Each structure stands twice: as structure tokens, then as C-alpha cells.
Image 1 (cartoon, one colour):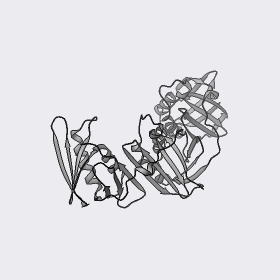
Image 2 (spheres, rainbow, N blue to C red):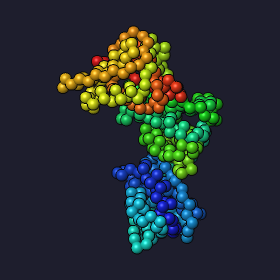
Image 3 (cartoon, rainbow, N blue to C red):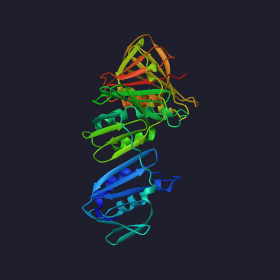
Image 4 (cartoon, rainbow, N blue to C red):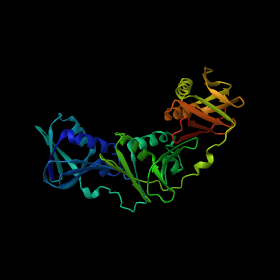
Length: 367
């Protein structure tokens, strides 16, 4: 393997794929990038066994093809440290990868390309295309509700639900739930459900940098693939059954509130100042024309703030983890938000007034 490439052409794709690499891994090859030069195309691939990310870049000067793996961190640091507009030459010498540019020369340890894990090929049962903007909004409005280290594997991920003409993302940690549906053409003849791991959902969101560019999503029984012009992400799926989330969505609440989303978010944000990470339960008093937030901490410190709202129903006092409401008010992008409640012991439904397919559920907390 021997080729030359412009440093500036290599830097961005290398940075894209390096985000998946684990600094410490039980398998040394997972700390490496797979470099595969075929024809005039260089493919860069990283993997953590659950998630694979690859990017391609065109190479004008190829003297010989080949495949090898070398340290992702060192390759990226070398590339980043070289001057702009410089040219880099790669070649293999024995068990070493030689990287040269101007008067700079490096010899890096390698591992065989055959040791690098490769995603399995399987029959795709779903196929759809949407814009990066649509997918980015879908992920941004739901990913915050995923659990992180729950003993139930499906909570540590995101449900991707494909139905005829629609794509829905759902996430919950058992205390709050977020769902977002977009209309998109697909090949589904019946509803299909895939659970994307938390790390994969976060990594996919990071890759969506061009709102108008298209993303093609395909998937089957054990994998999902998101293909863009700049890169391709392949992820294993969580092998679990997702909970029946529909039954926890409250309907026909007897009390409703409509208010300015940003004003409500800021009031909750200020209330959170008094709280520690362990305790963030605030009291919310809802009455005629008023949304009142009261925060008290163990040091007997108190904050109170009222926000003018349109409220219908009997007055109610209800407790919430204030950080959950902040997350929802941040995820909603419209000016107005609607809250529907039944009583102090039942979950609340929050939706943008100008509903664009997003709904949020937050369970109350005991005061």
C-alpha cells in the first residue's frame, strides 16, 4: 500500500470516524483505524463492535493498493499537526505504517486488516430517505429522554418505529418520555420497530451537519445503516422488546395550560439554582393566569417565581423534577407550549401549540 493525499482532504473524514474509537479497549485493534485504498478511493473505518463508522475520500496519487490498521489517535494527531496545504505520503514497510510529509517522518505500529471487525450483511426490511434536518430534529427532540445505565436494555436506547408513510423516534427513562413523528415515504407494509443503542443515536446526531443533504436509512433484524455523502454509520440493534409506550401517554386531561415556552424554561432554570444533583423536586402551583414555581432545598433556601399563562381548570399543586421540565422546554422549538394535567398524581402531557409531531410526558414527583 502506497499513496499520497492532501492533508486538508484527509483531516475532516479522519476526524469524523475517530469519534467512535475507544481510548481503552480489550481488543487492541479497536483503537485503530482501518485504512483501505482501492482504486483512487481511500476508505477510513472505525468500530467499537457495536457501532461502525466509515468515510471515503478521493486520492489522486495511488502507487499500490492495500489494507492496514494503525492507531486512530496517532494518525489524527499527526494529520492535524501538519501544516495546511501539505501533502502526506503513506506506505507500508514490514509491520510499520510510514507517514511522511516534508521533513516529518513517522513509523507507526500496525495490526492486520483481517483482525478488524466487519459488520454483517443482512437482508434489509426497511428503507427510507429523509433530509438531515428532519432526522436531526427527530433525534434532538427525543434523545435527552434515553436512560444511561438502566438494567432494562431497551431504555438505554431509542425506539425507531417505521410505518407506512411515517418515521417515529421514542425515548424514555421511565420518568419522562419523548416522541417525535415525521412524515416520510418508505417501503414499510406493516409497522416495524428497531431499538438504536444510546451511543449510536448520539453519534448519528453528531454526524448530521448539512440540513439539506439526504440520509438514506436501511435496516434489518440486527443492524441499522445511515448513509450520507460524507460517511456511513452501521449500528447493531438492542436485542430487546420495547415497552408499550402508548399506554402511558395521558389523554383528555381536565386541566390545561398554554404559556410562553422560553419564559417557562427560564423560570425553571432559575429555580434549579438552589438544587443539588441529588434533589431537584420543585413545587408547581397552577391557577388562574399563573404558573408558579417554588423551590426549597435542605438549607431552608427558597425561590419563588410566577409566569403569566392561560390556564383552564381547578387550581392544582404538583411536584416535578425541575430538570425534566427544563429538558422538555429546551427540546420544544415553538414559541408556545401546552400542558395537559389530570391531578397531582398523574403524568402531564406537554406539546408545542404549533404541533409538529412531538409529544412529551413527565411523571410527577412527591412533594
